[in-house]
Picture (cartoon, rainbow over the protein chains, first blue to last red):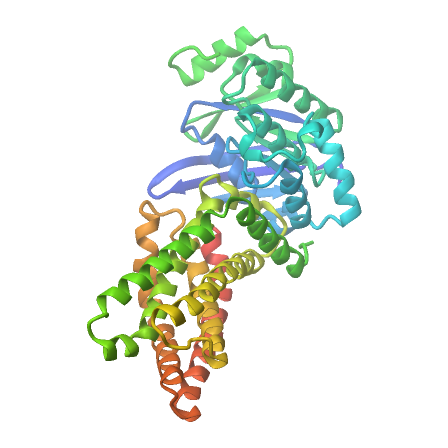
Length: 244
Length: 225
């Protein structure tokens, strides 16, 4: 794979649900190991864009290339490179944390020994190694979200897509999650994250995309931006009430 | 690179069985429903001994179909309600592997109910249903129903009134299966000559193969958006 090429390339991407255009001519590229914050109001198309990048949804028009593979035609090749953390945990409540990870490890074709090692490593990483045999239905929302990240990291994907991962978390759980995101950055994974918590954006990402009515209204560096100026920019673009 | 078909299928079946062993919500509901169903039919047909005896295979198949539909709805709800189907679709496994995994676990659950039902009906209806050929017909019929049930429950998963939509979608499609399974089992229970029921059993096998092939081809379209 060419290291110079963007790992994610999106050109003129559009998506219509029924008669409603959700994304209109969206174009951007993401460099390897870059972290992008995807911002926008509810209904602006953030989750739809993540679903398209994950290959869970088919575009109405335009082009999506991940690691050189084109979606949706070559989705099978792309799947191993992607880990998704949705606002739903995507876990089975009747299974323990270890059983959930073991199941997903099998689906990703990890051999028994490698699976055992990876499960221990990711459970340790998310701080759930002492609860590995507890049923997921007994977990708090924060613990489920941490396990969800463990599931997404299990097969060591190059790209991590996080859809509002901070939703419903208390301060402590959000701080743990933030550390996990930083640790994924240290491992040089490419991250695309949606959030409504603008205060977190500059500390977690170097670049932001603001979606407004299905179009990219802002694509730029936010590393040097304070949380306050990002809020102002967001309010100018999206209007409406102040956000966190 | 895809995960091998067999690995993915076994992982899904193993996950479903393990989850069910722990919660028992699917099997208990299906078995209690099936038991109540044969009891209600038994009371309804009590006054006419002859009609009761002739209706046994009908009672068996109607009960199995309705119990299996309860199972399909619950089994796919486990995937759909928490968005878990997305997690399956994200994995590098072929769509037929996901379909076949769900089909096999639904088949095993319904077969277990059938295995409870046959001796129960033998006692309640005072007719021996523990016949090898009838059991073969039951296994084949349950597999066939599970095939279309697995596909149609995936199709109706995201519809608003899923629980009502599945029977509406499934019953017309299941009619050829019901007819052949019913004819084969009625003739077997009557003690008719082999040629009178074997043809229906062969027809059931043929329809099963056709449905399996069709579902196999269609599952990719159904599972993808």
